[in-house]
Image (tube, rainbow, N blue to C red):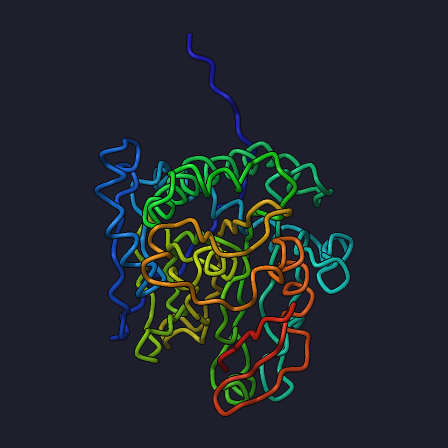
Length: 363
């Protein structure tokens, strides 16, 4: 007789219906990750991934190992920390981003400054891949085995294959980047669940409909589980904002600052933002599920100058090699400053200097 394992009952989350708006979507490549299981398959995908990461900075992944049912379960779980935890308990598990440089725990609404005195309506819950690293609200505790499995799936079955493709694209041994993203190392790689709530017309007007200003991610690789609310926009190399299209049960992948540093500017950390969705979705919340990867804390984010590709095309340095921050220094300084520091406005952009590096935000 087969033994079935009972999973905790979680109230189902109902996503918004797809928009009918006629939007200007970015043309992003779709990578079949199942092909990365063999050396031959990886070699066949490298050009696609390299082209995407040197041009658009984003691509989709399909056949990533999760069924539509498993992905739906993750979104059901993602909704729990927002809808099934009391406000007082949320306060008890609020993160210490500004003082510790760690996003673990809740990021409450109205923590980030957007524009003209208006703050965000984005709530987040961040879980280190080591789910025992800090405590969790009561409603999440029965779900920790599934959250750990989610982290391990993303790390070993999605992130590592992508890292191999990025290393091959630099003509480095395929384990080069995998070896600095160890699951058991000290690092801040984490799963993030995020929920955007609708705002008032006055807030939309004062922020020009921007919910999260244009930015690059802090770490190496970001995995976003595609969801239907059309709000994410990517800044193209031509300087135009285009929407990311929703694809059922696909992941949207982009690289962050740390990978741009390691690749000597060969791979692009693309600027992206979140704006108010089109009218037929404006009454819905936007729920997101992510896996944010960072290299091991002790890794120095200097270019991998041994890459034959970088030796041919040259290195775009953001700092001198001897002044390169470690992953720990970079993520702590950017996390503590993000959405809180005083920015210098220069026309359409806002700037700050973090660990000696000029960081640009687009509002």
